[in-house]
Image (cartoon, rainbow, N blue to C red; front, side, top):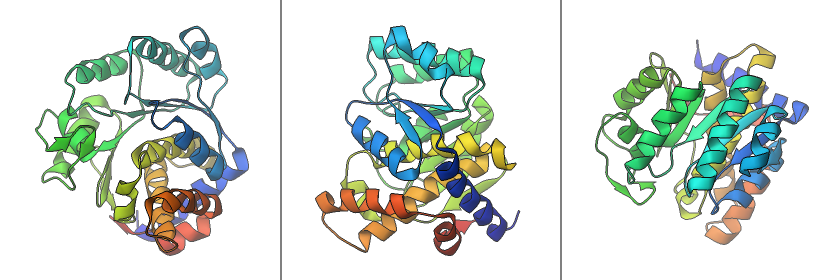
Length: 273
């Protein structure tokens, strides 16, 4: 598929999210709950942050997608995630997994394997260090953060995609998205996105929103993943044009997501096929 055709599909996805207003349940880390909720609202989706063990199964069944982020996962939340995944499987809605910290905390790799054993997860979105860890390779990380672009990330991403049977998005200076065979790079973004907490989590939440509408417009999770990643990249660039200070940048990023349209995607999307 040619680049312009992909950008048109991505633009259609972004506009459709605003038309459909999908309900996204987010089980995310305590650091970025508010960020994920607000970025989804600005994007045109309807966020919910239901992660209570006794409630999440029923709630996910009425949702349109599930976003899971294991950044601050404790035993109670792990149990809730399992209930949510089983409910999403039964309801046949997309699941997006953000494997935060799996490059630094080995236990999380086993947790992720279990999630894949009990249901089909559609998309894994992580930083490059996390994707390398899922591929069984070493990467330089600092806590939950990855240290820039990583040599070999393309093959590692394809390996993870084939291992789990899912789409993989590895974020960095240039983001990599693959279905195990086809690989594309999203070249939108700015260094300022690394100066605020939660940019990666917000990207994952946006991916959950874009994945909900993929089937409605005859496209796939691969293209939807690019749409979510590209959306925050373009919004990040636009916000950087308004301010260089992290506090005001966070606000500008939210405003830029709010005004993002499919037309903006087509005009400003930077994609390497």
